[in-house]
Length: 312
Image (cartoon, rainbow, N blue to C red; front, side, top):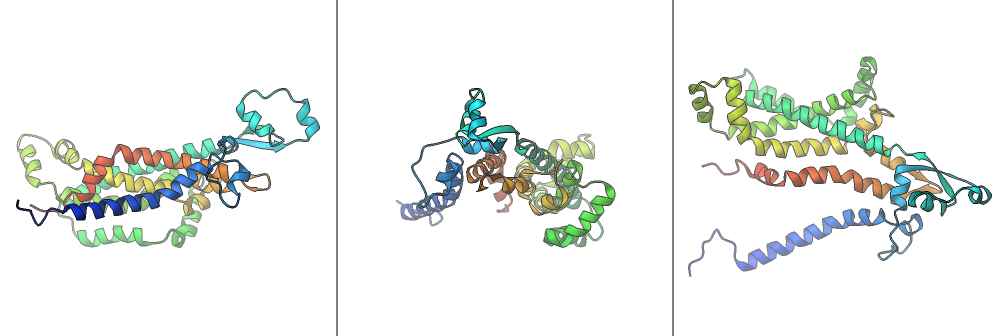
C-alpha cells in the first residue's frame, strides 16, 4: 500500500498528539488553580502545603460582591437570624454585610469599553483596509507603516501626554474616552490584519457585481464582507483581548465611573490582608466573556488564521 510523503505516519501523529495534550495540560494548570482557589476559604487559600482536597465554599464570591464590616460578638448576638447563605457565611467570620461591592459596576464597564472599542476598531479598520486593498492611494506603503508604528510604542511612553490631553478635553474617567483610546491602539492591528484578508478576495467578484448594477458600497457590503467574515472574526478576538486585559491606561485614566475590572481586582482587600479567594473568583468571572466570545467564533478564528496561507 502506497503512502504519501505529505501524510503523517501513525508514529508522528502519536507524538504530535502527545505533545499537544501535554502543552494543553500545562497551560490549563494555572487556570484550574485560579478556579479552585475561588471556592476555598481564606485560610485554605494560603495554607502550606497547598490544599488539593478541601471543603468547597462560596466565601470568595460572597466577599467579591459585598463589602463587610467587623462587629463585636455582643452586637452579632443581637442581630436577627441570617436571611440568606451570604449573610451566614459572613457572620461566621464575625462580620456583617455593609452593602454591595463595586465589582459588578467595574465588570459592566469592562464589557462596555471592551466590546465597544472592538466594534469601533473592526468597523473603521475594515473600511480602511478595503481602501488600501482596492484603491490606488498615494504613499500607501508609508501610510501603512505609520499606522503600524503606532502599535510599536509602549503605553507608558504616551501615558502622560494622553492623561493631560484627556483632562483638558474632559474625557478622563469616561466610557467614551476609554473606547476612543483603545480603538486608536487597536485600529493599526485591525487594518493590517484585515488588509491581508481582503487582498485574498478576488477583485473579479466585485467587478461582476458592479457590472450587474451594484454600487461600490453594495458590492463591498454584499460581496466582500461575507468573504472577509473569517478575518473579521479573528481580528475581533485579538482586539477584544487587548481591550479586555489592558491595565496601564485603565489605572491612569480611570478611578471611578469608567474604571474597568483589571485595576479593581487587585484592590480587593480582606480583613488581615489580600482576600485571595475573592481575587480568584473575580479573575474567574473576568475570564468568562472572552472565553465565551472566542468559543463562539472558534471556527472563524481557525479559518481566519490560516486564510491565505496557500496561494492557488
